[in-house]
Length: 90
Length: 304
Image (cartoon, rainbow over the protein chains, first blue to last red):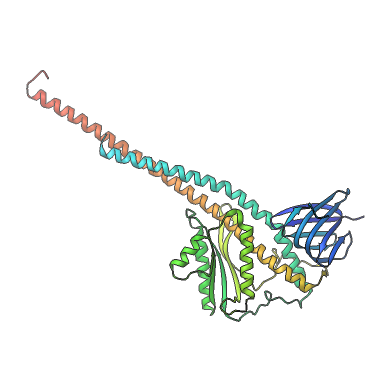
């Protein structure tokens, strides 16, 4: 079973990086789940919550407001303008 | 104490005071370089991600069109130059180098038959152009180091707006960035680069053409490009602002180091002069006493 290499960056820093089992992002046309071996994708993000589920099941959640995600050979790059610790969003 | 000695003492004291100030400024700048440089590095992953993404879109959908990708933009012949200078003085040649680079670019553009239009960040650049009766269209000044991301956003909005404007008085065909690249603590280079029309090249061009996989775009390539390009511009501008800030601190540190050294030299010089003046005074006093004593003994009197 392969894992995702995730790099989550905001305009001024790296928010999270490591390997994850699953990533859920708020794509422009609806919430999008990313699993290993997904086809290469480049998607625009909307306001919403990025959820990264680590290999050990640990969940990291951040509220984002616009950005994009690219998925390529299990390398996921999430770049957003701002990332805040998710509070209200679920 | 003689008048001359007093004069030297005064100069020494003032040089000592200045030395303290220069030293303090030097140390402040030195401590800020590291912080500013760290901030530059922190924005790099984001910039790389955007550049990669744009490259991916551009290589895989040759038919993607965006006004900023169009290489032949010539409507009004106006070319915007964003010049980044310092707000403060005491930065050595930092602002002048940036201004010189901007002037070279402007002359080059005039030779090509274009009209340079200036957008300036920092008070030094603003005063330079205002004094020469060529006031910049917009000047962002004064600016705070802590507000660079917000400032970058504002500048990017403004430039994007002007580039897309329909009004021939405002419309820009091209946009250039002039700022100072922070290569290292000891080397900063003022350079002009073209921002629009975009040249999508990877940072390490030539090494090996990166092969991008066939991406699936969500929602579609056009929308993705529309979203990415403003972000790309903004990240380029913010990155350059931060590099310029780091360079400003480095230039300040160097200038203040030189100033401190000069103050030390002044202190040494005036100390020497004060010493010889004191010695001269002592010598004169002694010779007066000796002369007086000689005169007395010559007169035949034994008592005082």
